[in-house]
Each structure stands twice: as C-alpha cells, then as structure tokens.
Length: 437
Ligand SMILES: [Zn+2]
Image (tube, rainbow, N blue to C red; front, side, top):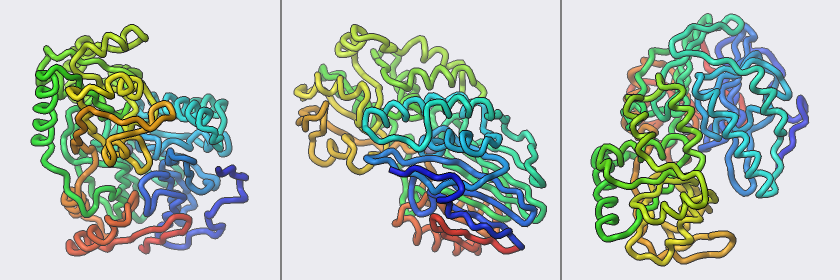
C-alpha cells in the first residue's frame, strides 16, 4: 500500500530543464500498467500524460506526481486513469481527454473504489475526489488545437478502443507524438490509428517482439467454435473486458448469426450506453443501435437464470477475477458440452490464467474444477511487432522513446526500430530521460 505525502515523496527532480525535453516516467516505463509521465521543456511548461494503476493484490501505483500545468488522458483503461482522482484532489489542474473517455472514467473509478473496499487495499484517493475530478475535466475533440503554456497540442484517434487518443504536442523546438495504447488495424468497433509526423515519438511496446495471428482468421475460428458449442447443446461463456472486448464480441456474434441467443451481463452494459451517447467514436453506430436492441441484456436474477438457457453469455470480468462470470461458471462447471472462450490477456494470478493452466479456478473462495471445454482466442487491440515498427518509421521521428514495455519486448523493438535509422530510448521508472535538441 502506498500513501503519498504530497510534495515529499516524488521522484521528480527540482532543477529546471536547460535544453531539450525531459520525460520523467512516474510509472509505466518498463512495465505494462501504472502509466504516468511528466513532460517538461525549457519554457517551464509541465504536463502529465495519464496516471494509472495496476490492479493486483495489492495494487501498485506510479510515483507521486509533482505540481503540473495540466493532465492529458489518452483513454479510459485503468492502467492509464486509475490514479487521476488523486491529481484533482492534490493539484487541481485542468484534466483533458476525449468526451467519451471523460464519460467512462468516473464509472471505472467507482468500480475500482468498490473493489478496493472488498479486497481491503485502501486507495491513495477517496470517493469524494471523484466529484472534484468532474469539476476540472475538459472534453476535447480530435484535431482541435489547444494551448498549454507555450505549447500547442491536439488529439488524434489511436484505434485500441473507442475514444482512445494519441497526443501531438507542438513545442517551440520539437513536435512530439505520444501514442497511448494504439492499434493500426481496424477492429469491429473502431478504426485503426494513422501515423502523425513528429520529431520525437513516444510509443507503447506491449507486443514488441510478438505478432498476433491474423485477426480475420482468429475471428472465424472463434465463430466456428461458438457454432460447434451451440449445436452440441452447450452454452459458450465469453468472459470479456467491460470496455472494448465485450462489444467487439457482440458485434462479431451479431454479424455471424443474429439468430443466436446472446446474453450480455456486467459493467459492459453501462460502458456501451456511453458509447451509444458518443456515436462519433464508434464504427457504424447505426448497426450498434440494432445490436443493442438485439442482445439480451441481463438486469436481474431472473434474467441471469434465463441466460442459462441461451446460446452465448458475454460478461465480465474479462480475467475471471470476480464479476457475474463466476456465477455462470459455478452453475455450468460440470457441463462438458459448454465452453469458456477466453478472448483477452490474462494477468498472472487471475482466475483466467489458472483456468488455462490447470482447468480450475477460485469461485467464491473455493478452487473449483471446470469440466467445460476451455479455448483461447487472440483478439488483441494493440499493435503487434511489425505494425509498431512500421508506425514508428512512418512518423519520421528521429527519436523513439518506448514505454509500456514488458522485458521481452525491449531488444526486438530496439533492433528493428534502429534498423530504420531511428534512435531508440528506453526510459526507466522514477528517472528522467533527456532528449537533446
Ligand atoms: Zn488500454
């Protein structure tokens, strides 16, 4: 557990920047999660990009953020926004994001707060701070020029999930592109990111050194399995994240066969409502309205029982760590005709990882054997290795700063990007990285 003492526990240096740009990663450098980075140049303008946490047992947090002129948030995933209420409580600066990210964030915080109470890990911020955050939050449209101090900046679509943004900064001497989490491929719900030219690129590297299977082939394999499970009389349980993956799955199922009886449970329903209120962020919003009327939304205990007589259940949590998915699994655990179809990343120590490894997982405190078939599908919303390298090349950046990096991604990405004649920088948490002019 970390409780910050504002102004006393930060790793941020007290000296001014003489020349070039300083990137100070409070977290999220050589790790996936906990993102937070302070950017400053000689004009003294100081901006925080993202401030997340890593949900775990116990959760982990980035370093304390120093005072800043503004915060810009790339998207609504917890590893990028989880600590933002602390910023508004302690620094009171404006916080910018797209309108959809701003709408989704409070829901994510309330959920995080609830889980922290249940798990007995107090957060460094309080429930009241969520309300304060709403007062300083400002929505920004894509390609709408903004000013902070002597810098201009604007947001560009990042793919990944609806509302996700890249940030382009125009400093007096440099143009910087911050990717956030990106995907250049079109997904069922959002179009892929396009490169923006820059002198310095700060790019996520989650899948450096790895390639995803072809998305279309993986989607076909997934749908074939759904049909197989349904035709043998089973139910397909699809644990899916509330923000992005669940909706991708629903669109795939609707397009594959609208006669399927698909039930949708968990926090994803509220997320989807926000998507429908911000239709400019999703591909073919009209089709989404039809999907919303088609899918059987679970709102009560009796709905849940009805779902056990349907074909597919799409529900949270995506990593089988709590959420309605455990209720369904507990009832279907002995049914060999049913299947659990895992479609997302499973962190170490989560129920999903245990199920894939050993065929059992904790349900309400008891390790439970699952007789259902278990299959895994790769439907990631991050760029794979080659797309990252190509994206970096197409920005024309002289310097590439990599972050959001698992250890195994570092060398493959460095080698491939340097082969394109770009200088690669690997920052460390709690230390400053200076990019020269
Ligand atoms: Zn993300």
